[in-house]
Amino acid sequence: MEKIALITGATAGFGKSSVKKFIENGWKVIAAGRREERLAALKEQYGDALHYLAFDIQDSQQINVAIDSLPTEFKNIDLLINNAGLALGTSPAQQSDLEQWNTMVDTNIRGLMSLTHKVLPTLIEQRGAVINISSVAASYPYPGGNVYGGTKAFVVQFSLGLRSDLHGTGVRVTCVEPGMSETEFTLVRTKGDQSASDKLYEGANPMTGEDIAQTLFWIATLPPHVNINRVELMPVNQSFSPFQIHRT
Image 1 (spheres, rainbow, N blue to C red):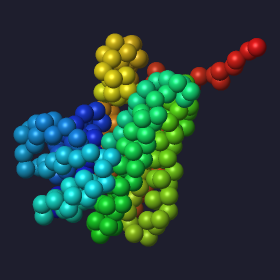
Image 2 (spheres, one colour; image 1 turned 90 degrees about the horizontal axis):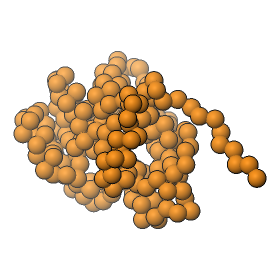
Image 3 (cartoon, rainbow, N blue to C red; image 1 turned 180 degrees about the vertical axis):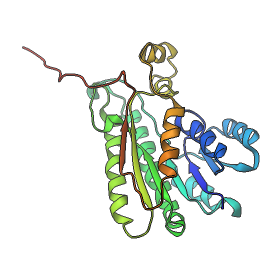
Image 4 (cartoon, rainbow, N blue to C red; image 1 turned 180 degrees about the horizontal axis):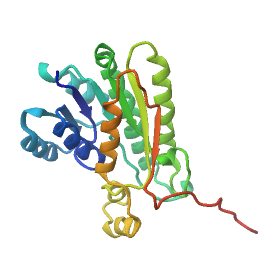
């Protein structure tokens, strides 16, 4: 029987690469995102193997309507990949835009919570799985990371809490925490500054969407009695820095 994955943030980066990986390996995919023109392009590319849902992850009502609209052949979701998320701004906290902070909280926390809550009954029926995408920023702070890192730390702890609550249901829960990966992430964070994105990744040999998709597929296809709790991964060229010291 075909498995069904619901992947958020499916129009770019990790999400788009994951859509490709899962469909090419025989899964059916529900691709979710805000940019309907990109979702329509995926539908044209993958045909009957893909159904798309265009909604704003920040709006719980839109989430409910979208999930309730699923056709019968896509209703029995086996896997939820909570990939939708973003970082906005690089300023220190004292200079940050509060609206950007609110948007990160609404997307990375509230959106993930709302969709997970909506889909959990189906995942329990299917004895399925949840994979939440966090970040190494959840564990390692850096200047300008402030609220973004805080939201990703929430994802880590929420994943552990889900794992505990779902004990005995057969539902697996994994938190994946990637490091530097070259996607549209930095373009979104800097409001489309291509030079900032190029500078960040230049010579760094960062991970790619394909690398993360391969990891997600490996987790999803392990035997059903095996749960990967947390995965932290970085490119080889990224590691850890000394503590910063201010001297007077």
